[in-house]
Image (cartoon, rainbow, N blue to C red):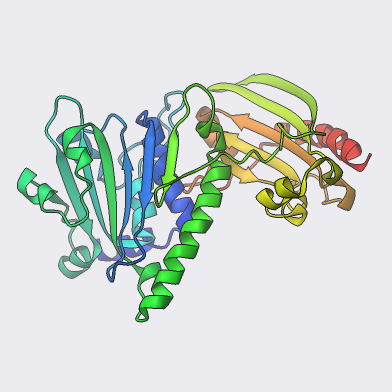
Length: 342
């Protein structure tokens, strides 16, 4: 265990991809509200992720606290954003040395369990701590709303990124990390923040607004061709987008996006897995980056059933295009690049 945990801590998540991996579970649990908090005033920083999804029973929680609790080759339900059954743990261990999960399922008692890396290293044993109701009520960072209704709260403690001998410096790191996280989630989960089944995401009590990388509601946007192909586990959907020329955008709109440079950097493929953005821009070797092709975007949405063929990684932050898809895209890419030049 002592050696294994060190490997799990170095899978290579950055803070944004780690939190995103945990949010996948909240979305799969049909949450309507997801709240992320990391108070910058605390001397011992902690991070809390709270959702109002359908929660887990005590036995489900213990099963989910196991490392790699699901077979990655098992068929996933449509809309299930999970992959290896280890995201919650590996994402947490990459940043925090202590993970506590509190959860309540309708009609069931509240349940909680905790992994503490210091303890695992000291005893060289997988010692998962299960908490009783008294322990749960006395938890330092418990959100009391979970005692009344269903949902799950995840608490990270001993977060190495936020530990600093200088309080002001630590506070600055937390604040800039949360601003960064907000932008990242607004882009990568933008499809979940709109529509009839929209989910409300909050970071530090601020409600997130969806950021559409195709600027499809702005003046001058052009919709290109689209196609749907049946593949294993669902449909592969491909759609071409041409962003509006900057002369069609107001200065306020340009500033909101972060400047035209920010837009131009993002030409290329946008690959979604079950509506969750995995790859944001870049042509993945299928085309070179053209100065005049900077308004070209191709949106690709894949079902989770193709994870094997597309080699989705544990972090769900990279994948590889199958040869057949590469050939199709090479032909398709020319259209948006030509239109962008024009």
